[in-house]
Image (cartoon, rainbow, N blue to C red; front, side):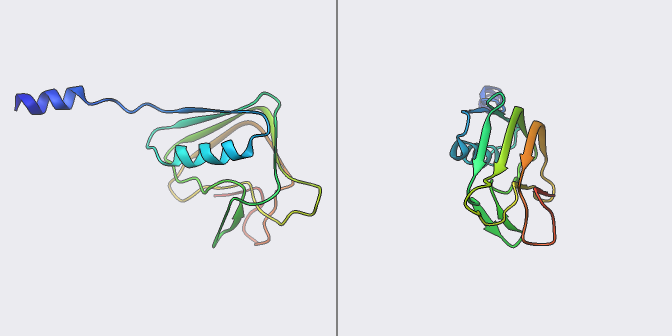
Amino acid sequence: LAAALVALFSATAVQAATYTIDDGDTTALITAVSSANATSETDEILLAPNGLYEFTAAAVSDSNGAHALPVVNSPGMTIRGNGATVRRAFAGSPPSFRFLTVANGAVATLQQLTLENFRSNLSNGGAILC
């Protein structure tokens, strides 16, 4: 019993992670969402102040269409934009895709973030599908 109690109280508590994304680094943003999806904590993704993140193609396609970011399936994720703009590229006629899909039961909070030019070729949603 004593060994079980020691093991119980010496377990390391899981803490929420914070991911800081450099201006324009869409690959790091995709990776941060994937990493946040892998935890049960409310992770935070910080975008560069007044940054610009431009997507030319979707990272994921599924039955709900194409998305710039992986589907959010985390019980808590916050993307703090700090005045940043995330957009689907205007030049070059990129295919239609949305910014984000939030799975049933998942939670995504977006703060101080502008989304531009995202659209779905399906009838269900534009920039965000919940």
